[in-house]
Amino acid sequence: MQDDRVETIPQDGRRTVKSFVLRSSRLAPFQVEALERFTDRYSIKYQQKELDFQALFHNERPVFVEIGFGMGDAAYRIAQSKPEYNYLGIEVFLNGFAKLLHRVGSSEMPNLRLIRFDAVAVLESMIPDASIAGFHIFFPDPWPKKKHYKRRLIQAPFAQLLAKKLIEGGYVYCVTDWEPYAQQMLEVFETIPAFENPYGGYAPPVPWRPTTSFERKGLEKNHPVLEVWVRRVSEH
Ligand SMILES: C[S@@+](CC[C@H](N)C(=O)[O-])C[C@H]1O[C@@H](n2cnc3c(N)ncnc32)[C@H](O)[C@@H]1O
Image (cartoon, protein in one colour):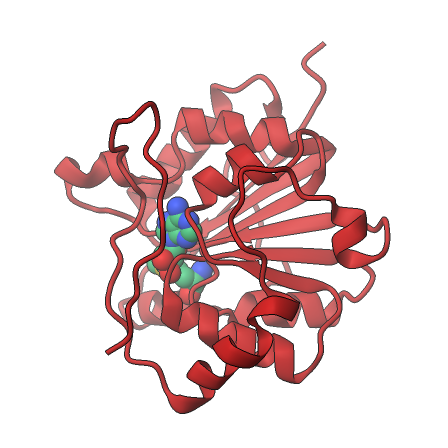
């Protein structure tokens, strides 16, 4: 059993509601090895200091962020198929982090870096305002019970934070198989003047998005796959 805790920071000295609950991970030897070999080169430690993307990727190409990449299939395949862009993957779950770190490190991917920390804190402290070309949030934890709704990631304060970090014309692309959550996403983005929904409702499927492991589980249960795509516009 590995220690699967990540540091989280209390705000104003108070514990805040998190969008995740950490589980213990049993790591395979290849994951342990990846953590030892590739952490320094391909992952970034949480810090209360803004990242310099040019220094990180050695270029000025657009940066896209995936939040909650799980086992990392989509993050890996998108970054691999679009070498002309830079990608940052954020995930708290050690098992998935170590798996993607293994893939990125062993293929020496130049355009994907990982952070293992709460995405809310990462966005607040490490991502400069108006610096991100797009956010990918695929199958965020649906928290279906009413008493857990407060844990859902896509709520107005977080959507405002996403808007602040996007460049004008940048996008947020969310996918879920939980219809009430998809509805909540549409409603939340609708309330924020910095976003426009070019589709007026759900978006058509995006051809370059690979199927994720949570999506497969949803499809086995005949859940619909619902896509929400909003664009950052000028508020003036
Ligand atoms: C339901 S899983 C989906 C994983 C993957 N995107 C997929 O489609 O297979 C949601 C993931 O988001 C991660 N997560 C939830 N809240 C997070 C946060 N605040 N920061 C980073 N990761 C988070 C969880 O650890 C979990 O792995």
